[in-house]
Length: 126
Image (cartoon, rainbow, N blue to C red; front, side, top):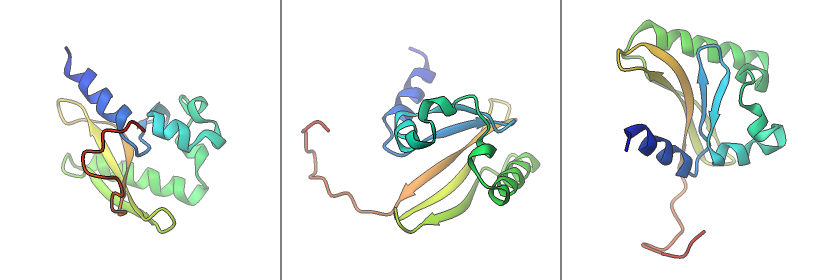
């Protein structure tokens, strides 16, 4: 089995929204958590649309600056962009690169600060 199958499974099982964009800022993939989280904005129908259309002008300019910074060096791969107090999470933009190190896109990474409330090894399905 190809490794890409494993990577896709990891992203699709993630409880955090994952929205992947190409360098033209087109949304090329949304995992199930993202489709659900952004359902009011169109959910799956956002695939193929510009991420910049989902943000105000100031945020769009920041996104463009970050992507430009990613392009300056193969070492520029992650940047902290915000803290969402209501959801108690930090948000980062992460560069996506091909095998040669060339920048091919980006995504937002959400890291929640909330402690897990589930029981250890609770085999009940969600």
